[in-house]
Image (tube, rainbow, N blue to C red; front, side):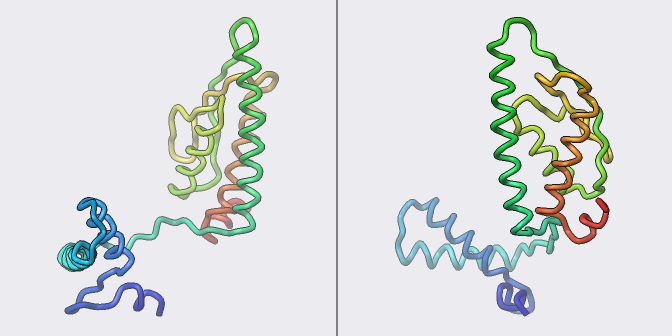
Length: 177
């Protein structure tokens, strides 16, 4: 029912109204002047473009679970603080910082979840995804001492769980169990 309201049929083809509105906003921005004519021209252009060039319906495989999202964001913010402090310590410390490259297996088979994990790992200071294979990441870490492989694998597994709980489909969540 919601799809029918957001994408009514026009001469036999569905026209997604949110996309039409977005294209109209881009049109007005490109013209640089908010006038009734520019808005109307943008809406007509958006309708014509979406009707002539229909896009396939894509499911990115991402769902938002609000409570899990809040937990993930709080944990991620704390991890950013700790990782930044660790990198600052090693930058100020004389001598070279310990670095390692670790292969980390993933439990999820979802490409969307794998990409989100890769982004999260690379965003945290002191870690970087060097390569990604099918259900495995190669991660470069800076400033971690001790049993680095076990620590990093545990941290990435925890991160993966939080991301899948916050953004995964039901099938993605079932994979982790």
